Length: 376
Ligand SMILES: [Zn+2]
Image 1 (cartoon, rainbow, N blue to C red):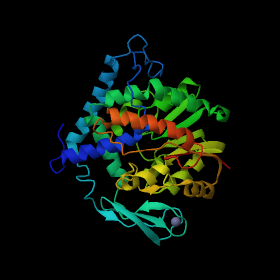
Image 2 (image 1 turned 90 degrees about the horizontal axis):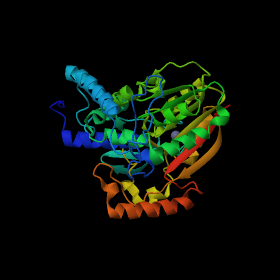
Image 3 (image 1 turned 45 degrees about the vertical axis):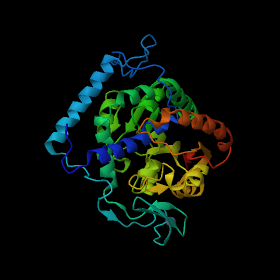
Image 4 (image 1 turned 90 degrees about the vertical axis):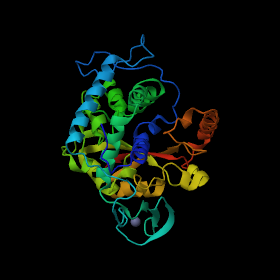
């Protein structure tokens, strides 16, 4: 497949890779070690999804590669007909926006990076990007999709999503939701490659669904779970429907976090749980790295929350915050696009970060905010 001629391939793919890294690689929480086992034998008939084969730990199963190959071909066919795509993520038309939380338009300038201005609302302290790219959701959809169809590492990402440390972490997360199980309806917004959905299904959530705007990824996950490829605000779900709605690494990307939270409130049953995580602008990592903090990415991360602003948003939209935690620290900029995570220096930093995190996670200064909020 060839990109449209006006697209600068190196820049475009680099950024697309970077963008999807948030959704797939970064969620491994530094778990950049070797994949422990791989996935999928031809046991897919009963929506059993992906079954690790303990006897075949070091090779991609043929069935999986074929599924991806099919997905890629399907997308290439679509793109060949009329793929326009955003030509340059940094040259797109930009629009001024006001604060999404309180609608005020009197921000203080914080800093600028790559021609994106970060400001803080004087009224509610929300940090956001203005002006920002027009049609940011559309450009994200194309960016993630382009990566999904061009990366040589997609099989590796899928394998990691469904095995080893990442899998155990997701299983543990799902287990924490047990007390909310009544109807078995659970929604993962930004479900990526489906690891959370799989873990939920394994633990008795009979109606696990996802939203994933990267169509190539959704094509893969959609073979096993109901998946929508449009933003939550454009999808119709029944009111009071879900026991759990999960949104990890999503809210910071949205043109209107408030609209998304309002929609989540509508589709959760009373007493249902919204589990949300997002980068923490009040983190030690930001103070250490400044603008090099990897979450400062103005074309994609247009809202940066801290404990105060996220709590405020949730309360305003009818939630009761029952858990507010943070975790994680970055000592140096990580670049997932060049194998940086496997260098000796990176491994040393990773070990130090793990140690520091034991302290950081007892505070609200970690780089990731993790919030549970119940629908009142
Ligand atoms: Zn505001």
